Length: 201
Image (cartoon, rainbow, N blue to C red; front, side, top):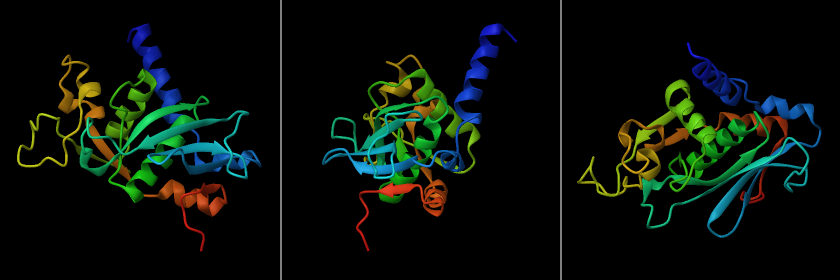
């Protein structure tokens, strides 16, 4: 195995295998995950203080998701990642929570259709190939290539094809993903989950 491949595999390990879990929040008395509307169209999932405000000290991070606009396509009713950033090893936990919330409130989660980092590509590859607890469902393109009789699954596939360079159907970015709320339920059990979209009872 070449040095380059070895380093790439090690980086993937650091990104996903060594990722933090809900239990890791308990090491910090003021570390929560909050779901909060960013504006009328988008939702933020972020590491928060006890009052739900976004954290500045480490660990910190956020994922912003929204329903796609008409130019992107209906994408089978899934939410789309439109921005993300997190302290090392703390990103995948936010992705899990965002995916679970998007499954509860929509039809799952898809990657950003405009621009995506190599680190994020690695996370989506891991969801597709190594997460048995995550469902994946193939989306069509805007030309309706795969399911011409159905339009609801049409979705911009530029990021999956990289301008036509790759077979987009085989790419992890061409699919929508769903996940049962195991992580959200654990965060609630630990008292570390704040959802500002929930109606108080």
